Image (cartoon, rainbow, N blue to C red; front, side, top):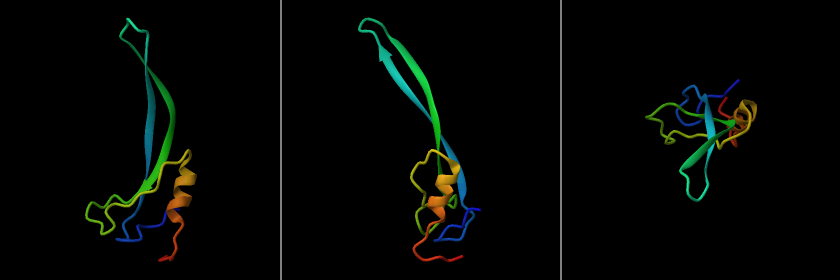
Amino acid sequence: MIKTCPFCNSKAVVKEFKRSKTEMTGVLTDRVFVHSLPSQFYVKCPNKDCNGCQPQTKFFDTKEQAISSWNERVIDNG
């Protein structure tokens, strides 16, 4: 379960960040290769009017890690 935003009490959301890596190969060619990388996840407050300036976690390899990071609070409001 994801805790609400500690600043505005809005329901937080898990977001997926789809990553890719672009590589140019060859000196005389214009070849560009795009490689898919594993997605990363973060949790954020979706409230654009949040007093905390839309807080969010850093990026994690799993949803569970992102949620765990978001739920860690110095002072627990609930």
